[in-house]
Image (cartoon, rainbow, N blue to C red):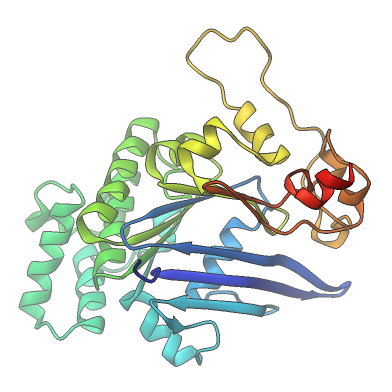
Length: 327
């Protein structure tokens, strides 16, 4: 079995505030293989985007990685100096942000930005880099790329700008791409095109993709595996169809039960009571216990660790055989 492209082990991210240290990510572990798309899903505040930013080395002070390790194809990157991390970012890891306007400089032509990135990370000449930029724009579905390459960001629609950002992320043929809510600001029809494009990246380039989103429809359509996050931890991880059809964690069950279907709905959609806890008020034990209908005494005392259940792993005491034996 080949080594994973991305390996995250027991990642912890903290933010220093007036009230003391707040832990936004608390012991997150997962792998992404070559050509695999891993979806990371959860409510706002679950820690999805912070996890992605930690991997790419963009946690700004007062935030910091306070524990754990991050490896790209065997190279540990969480402890690299800023200058070394800059070489990894762009070359080995690409990033697709939610709003393409934050990734593109409005004062420069689209082509100039792509060409500059290509030349930063490769040994291509100006002419060769321009040809590669045109090829990339064509690959991501921009028509007449020979003309559009000289356009400015404001001359592109939202969907086309996102395609340009994807081309920008692909410039140096990175091993890993982190896509943070890449379809949120787009029309549904354009979303489908971007989803199809991201799926093709993994297939054609062998790129590992970490797709951060709150949209289970996007996850179901795009991903090979899904990690369900809650309050800075991975509640459940497994093959996407398994987690959707047979969720194990009570929180994952609630998320999947809240997805409407095209079939006639005879019963009401599931509603998860309460809301995500603030970082300053994470409950003891399982952080989901105040909202969980099946919580018992141990859930309020001991923090559950991920337990393997077939192809899935779930952080829930309900699946701990020691608990079952004692019951």
